[in-house]
Image 1 (tube, rainbow, N blue to C red):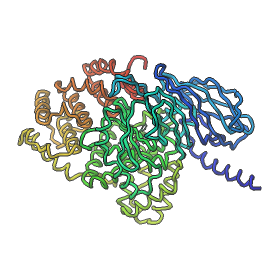
Image 2 (image 1 turned 135 degrees about the vertical axis):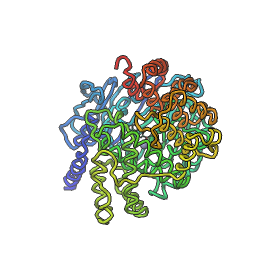
Image 3 (image 1 turned 180 degrees about the horizontal axis):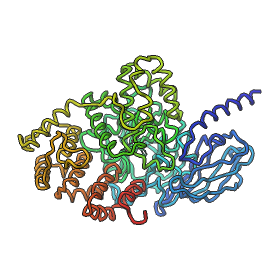
Image 4 (image 1 turned 60 degrees about the vertical axis):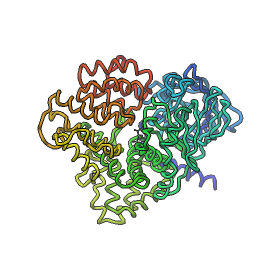
Length: 635
Ligand code: BES
Ligand code: ZN
C-alpha cells in the first residue's frame, strides 16, 4: 500500500516536471531521471582529452523506456549497467546522428531494476566545453592549463548526461592530473589538499548540469574571509586577493537581503585571459576573467553578479534556456542591490544607467523576436541568442515591480520566492503564477500599474518602465559638452576625480557626439554637426594625450576606447588594439571589436590578419561566434 502511494507521488512529481520541455536536450527525464553523477576522469594534456567513466544513478518512472543522454563529440567506448551498484554488466547502446547545435543522443536500453549506468568514454580535443591552454597562454608560462565552461549546452561535450537545466543532480568526482597541478571543481574543494595529482570532490546539493565545472593548472589559494577565498596562478594571486577583498562583505550583504547563503563556501577562480566570459557562477567556485583586476576594485560588480546567482540561478534555476531571463534578469537586479549595499547608491545608479544605455543601443539593432523576455529559441543555439535583453530588460522588470510595490514588500517577496523554489528548476509560467498569487493579487491597485504580459511577451520596453538615471552622469555630460564646444581643453576635464563608471559614460557620450548623424544614435546633444575625419582624429588625439586612454590598464575603459578608435579611425591606438585582441579572449570585448573592424573593407583585412594569429588562442565558444561574424573560411 505504501509502495503504491509512493509510486503515485512519484508519478505526480514526474508529471509536473514534464511541463518544461527543453528543446535543447534529447533527454527523457519524465521517464528516466538521473539523480547523481559520479566521475572518474584523467586529464591528459598531451592529447587534450579527458578520459574515464561517468556513472549515473537513475530513477525510473517507466520500466520500458531507455535512458537517453546528451553527448557531443564524445568517444563512447563501452556502457555497463548495474542493479546493485556493485556488479556491472555490459549493455548495448546507440549513438544517434549528430545535430550541429544539439550534438547526438546516446540511447541505452535498460534491463529491469537497473539503478546505475556506467559510461566509459573520452572527450574530443575540440570539445566545445573545454579549453586547453599551452604554457605560453598562462601567466606562469611553465605549465599547461585546462578549464570547462558548461553553460549553456556544453556539459554534454565532456560528460554524457541529461544536459537540461530541468534536471538537477548531485555529483562526486575523482580527477587525476599531472602531479604538480591542482584540480578544482564547482564542489567541495579542500584548499590544503596535497598536490599529488589525485583529487576528490563532492557536490551534495542538487544542481543543473550547466553548473558542473572543472579547472586544472598551477593554482594557489588565498583566503579572503571565513568562507571566501580565491584561486589563481602564483603570479596573479596577490593582485587577485587585493582586488577581491570585499567578497566576504558582499556575501554578508546579500544574505541580509535575500536569506542565508546555502552553498557553504564562496570561492573565486581567476582564470587566464582566454576565459571567454566575464564570469561564470559555478556553485561554490565562481570562474572569473582576469580582466576584472583593474587595481582599484572598480570592476567587482562582476563578483556581485556571480555571487547573486547563488540565489537567482543556482538555487532557483531556469528550467529551459527560454527562461534564461529568470537567471540573468533577477541576477542583474540583485547585483545592483549588492553594489548599493556595499558601495553606495551612486555606484549602483551609475551601473544601472550604463546598463540601460547598452540595452537601448542594442534594442535599436535587434529583431522583435529577440527583444522578448520569454524568447523562443527553438532550432537556435542558445549561445547565439545572447543579448542584453534577458539581463537588462529582465532587471528593469524587477525594478518596476520594486518601485510599484515598495522596496520592503518586494524584498520580502523575493526572499520568499527563493525559499519557495529553492533547489528547483522553474519555468517563466511558474514564476508568473507565483508572482500573481503572492504579490499581484494581494495588491490589485498597484498591480494594475505593471503591464506584466507586455514585459514578458512583447518586444521593446513598456512606456511605463523606470529608466534609471545618475546625477553623477549628468555632471559628466556637462563637462563633455563644454569640451566638445571648445570651452575647456581636454586637460581641464576633471577625469582624475571620476570613477571608472563616470569615465565609461564620458567615453560613450563623446562617441555618440562624434558619430556621423547618419549612423545609429546620432549626436547626443541633438545637433546635426557633422565632424570631418581630421577633426575627429584631432579630438581623439587630444583626449588620448590628456587621459592616456590607449595605455589604460582598465579593461572596460580600454575596450570602450578601442571601439571608439576603430569607429573614428584613430590610428595611434591600432597597435594596442592588436595587442588587446591577441591577449584577451573575453567574448564580450573581442567580438564587438572584430565586428566593428569588419564594417569597412580595410578593417576587415586587419581583422582577418589579427584573427588568423589569435584564433587558436580563443575558446571554442568565442571562435564559433567570431567565425560567423568574419565569415571565416569553412563556416
Ligand atoms: N551565466 C553567465 C555567463 C553565461 C551565460 C555563460 C550564458 C554561458 C551562457 C554569467 O553569470 C554572466 O552573465 N556573465 C557576464 C558578466 C555579468 C557581470 C553580466 C559576462 O560574462 O559577461
Ligand atoms: Zn549572469
